[in-house]
Length: 401
Image (cartoon, rainbow, N blue to C red; front, top):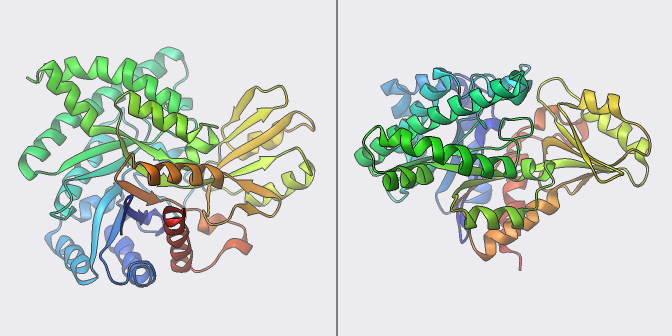
């Protein structure tokens, strides 16, 4: 829905379905009730997660017509897509396969280009641009040497630049500007704000500008296209896990001319070891589950940081008195500041939305809480009710003085 600070919705990756018919059935089941509660008298925007198989299904004319007819009948529109998870995301072990295939592969390129064409067709006439969030190039632990990691970084970067050329053609043909919103994530090749900004200035532009010049663009036009079509997805959970300060990061992005494609409004778990450490650790073990990666960034008592790929490794490394704080990649519900003895990074959400409210730094906001199915039982309620609470909480933050 429209707010004074930009478009707001939630990401449909909360709903299962890798083929379109299954995902569409879940959208039809849940979204009308959500819209009735949060946007009864105005059109409601959607952030769709379209898996690779679903993107191919939507090439069918009947499937496409069913979607567009439904959007019109329900007074809905689409303004952003989640193109990070390629395949299975519910009911299977996801873990590091969320990056598969990565940006070193033609499969990731083809999938994202297909999404770009879909989004250009779905955007309403009044909406000139839309974004597709995507993987931060690859999962860094797949590359066993600094040389292999650098090679993967450069190969993935050039694939994105080749996509920029296609996105420029889409804009020329349709008038719709589609931007790819790189989503820094713990243990991605681009895992935090610092790495993304450094990559943008020291790799993307230096490699991308001459690569596009070889395709016939001037240097100035090549840089303009890269900056327009390669942006950042500001996932607040991921920034929180990295202990990144929202205000500082947003100011640097603005200073360096890097656009924010969308804010993903999301929250991480936070464990403060200053009191009741053993009790908190025992409670955190209830959140251990086999589906998603839950990377942990730990602040030690000496002020240094150490990172663990998943909760298993963090639990194995725990020693009393060694740690001050853990932050855990979990995408817990936004509207709860604490989970018993466990805290969250809700503070970072409030800070980010306060900046957005004061001076909007992007036109798109998408709530991304997808872990309902793996949360402890006491936090589980019907999905549509959960979504409504999330949206209403963000609406309240945007209205609050």
